[in-house]
Image 1 (cartoon, helix red, strand yellow):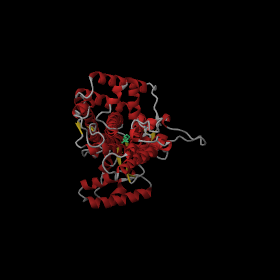
Image 2 (image 1 turned 180 degrees about the horizontal axis):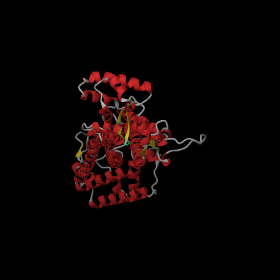
Image 3 (image 1 turned 135 degrees about the horizontal axis):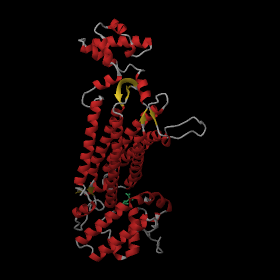
Image 4 (image 1 turned 60 degrees about the vertical axis):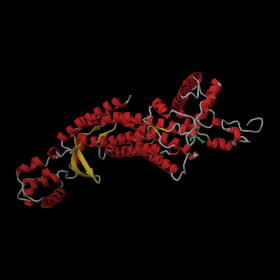
Length: 474
Ligand code: ARG
């Protein structure tokens, strides 16, 4: 509080008393938005350069501001910066420090700008960076999945529907299914990036400003593809943050599905996959335990990110135009969604290459559920029986085999022929696991020939998107 009873805040001119201590603690955001310092300094540096270009600041002032900001950045980077709660947020902490260091010129930085367009700019820069980081991580994970799929093209495991054994599939095919999921997540993030990469700065508080700001120049300096069209929209909407978090939430939902499968597969009752010891933990009481904590935690953390999305949706709901302080609450969910997804992607990229199918166990599991029954029906179709009749005949054979306690391929020919005289000796070659796999040659099917072709396409697609990025990252 000033000696004259006023308010010492940067905005304190019209206030006759200092901020209530409870209010100060309640409304500060520097405890979490300090994380935006790089973006804030980049935005301020670009704004200052532009003010110099249009003649609002002198060249000397621009120089003082830019080198002052660079020095502050160094100090923050090295943990030498004193963040102050009474200065509310990242923006005013940096601005106050700048003025303390360089004097008058520092007080001119905020010309033609508001914290409303400043914070919207910072958040867009942050989300853009976060997307680029996540896209690189997803690309690494994709590469691991494709490589693992290649090693396991010929490994047979039961494919499930309703979590009941359905038909044999290649483990490589299963891994490529995961890859398709995460690929679409990458596409969603890249798509959200396009709408994120629009500059709000120059919208000022909500209505624009009388200064002849060169917004396109600022956009160019900060790498934004466009400037926002409407100042009221630009300072108030956080839909880009919602889209980003929605893409993160959906990616987490996918990872939670993989996690569930790993929890099941690593259970000795399945025994399909052995998780490396380094990715599991034990029990403090049961010496026998080796628990799949990583997949369990990924599955659990999915709830957080879905919660982050929900928080942002509800935060934005019913907000009148333009900026409202509610928007300050956008940061924790966005940061949390980013951190959580990044951590889970990192773990899975490390785990996937160390994940091995126990081929014997996976094969043995196929013997539990007559997974080649459809192949037997297809065999009867090839002998002229309509599919619906073939289905019925094979149903009866399955019931018989279940009663005998053996797999279809283990039934003597004479027994099979009691159900259909169309069955001859050549049937056995058709109802092995390998034959079943090899027969599923539709585009995108599990036949090893198809899985190999899918791997070739996946690699080509990765390379193409890599050179795309090189082409546009100018
Ligand atoms: N800390 C604020 C936020 O995150 C910055 C903008 C404050 N604007 C204002 N008019 N009080 O939204």
